[in-house]
Length: 318
Figure 1 (tube, rainbow, N blue to C red):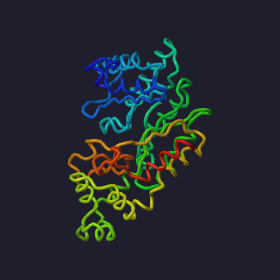
Figure 2: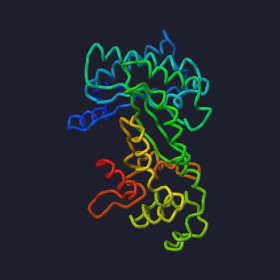
Figure 3: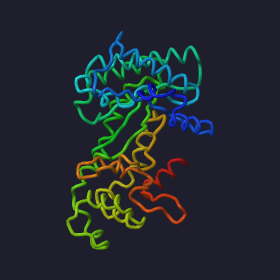
Figure 4: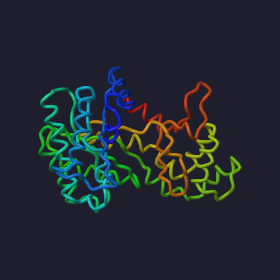
């Protein structure tokens, strides 16, 4: 949202791209990211609150009735200082912004549905707090809101159920949830220091005991042929045992009867590879397309993580 200070949001390249997709018939979701790592969450009557309010009005003017879903917040319980995570101040800030967006839509009309977003780490007891309870109470009791967003980045497959067990019973009848991000990135990270699979090491002449993260780093430095990347993943037990995660997780979302939208990361990008090491979050293992670790195909299409691509395509038809 701070980008709204640099240029009119209607002229933002990212918003223009999103609205162009909407004009071509794609359904669209826009999340509004308010970041307060270096300062306290704004309070009513403060200059910082006035700034946040102005930014919101500027974005609403650019996108309302053009995007299908607008999410008030991105990861509020992460994008703040530790002292604010369980505070009333955080809830009051996002509740104020939500009411502002609702009032703006009431005045101007339009198709855009409003959600709050997004909740993280609900598989951990210390992230299910009075503040998250208040969050869900506000969502449930505010008739103009259609629900809340979830970002289940998981340390293991089973942990995703905790998100559904917490959120779904707290929605009112007819409300739904979004999952605009989800992955096993925290699980992948636990295996970065594992030795690479012996079968892979033997086939490709990699030293026995080379850690997984070094193999990934070598793929970043010199992208692998598609077969080598596919072998690296399929020969790694931690990946092959979970290679149906995308389809399985979406099924769990859908089985609740409350899923509005699930979205998944399409392609690797520069921040995923910069300075990659043993303690890096391996977001790049989630990606369908892998332009930074896999050589492009002869037809010019980027390399891919085949299980994710196949499941993603199948889910569009399901």
